[in-house]
Image 1: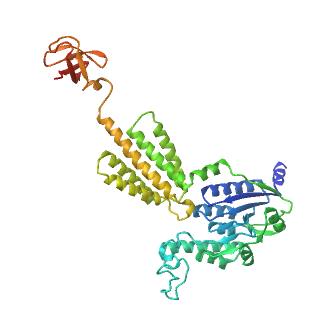
Image 2: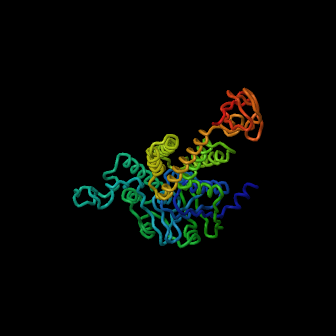
Image 3: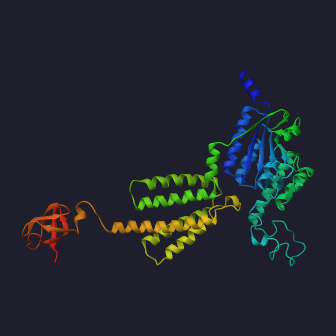
Length: 440
């Protein structure tokens, strides 16, 4: 009875998640958690209010899998007016049990971003399908002239969105077209072509329209919606989402990685209280976790490491700047290649790369050179620190006597007789006896 009462408590509740910006690890975490909680509470419907330019494939597939396995119907609603469901957003809309859009919104442009990134695919460029010198048999689809890997990515994307269209009974032909040709539709066009199911001014208007609708394939079940008087609850993001959103920002993840490397190198060359080492370890762990969630290019990471090694080599072995210049080139190249994606939202800022590369080069070279110079000076404390220091003879002596050095009286030996107040220099130490020579 208690379980039945708990289930009925949320039976007429609709939860709304607002997703804005690029789809990434933070987004997939937020949606996954919300869908699991919705299933546990057995609510009526989950609405994903979406406005996105696209996102990462891995994060998209996690969300799609969660939607397909959800026992609660999911509606993707492209809103507010002026919003878009581009690229990854189109896949989410196709995967959802219900697709809806605001009157002034658009959907499409789902070609994988690696397609068309080559200059050979830029409209109007020599050798492109639209060049007047090309044969009429060519077309303007992205796969024309693409590499084998690009074609594999394209065909995989086409098959993926077509399978979603077939599952939800939506327009399969246009689904393929939006991937191959980056086709785009307004809300009214999408409704006419069976790409979306509803056009609604707001969430309440949407719920009024879908009330009583029969939804099939809800994790193998058929559900009749009761949303006319449903309680609408906005789902707020949690601290994990905010944390993931910050550290998976490509500039932040990159900064954490570089600060961690620099701090640990500084600690190794200038050991002290360990503050730099602790900071370096924390930054490296956070940076590594962020890179694990992002599409990492290991060639870029290797170039970063090579750059740091060259900076160290420049500090240790003067090379008239050759190692330093090579390090800067390697470091910048590695920074720009660090993320294996062409999605603008997951690219490192050129300004950040330039600033971090310059600061890293100067910092490492300066710190390491300073540390090495300090080491070459030899010990500055203890008995060994007396070697090379000046002393004053306290009383005349031959062979053995007493001298005053560094604020203390010491036993001393000399190869020649010394007179009171003679200035001598400490050449060696035997136990607690100084071996001195007269300063001439």
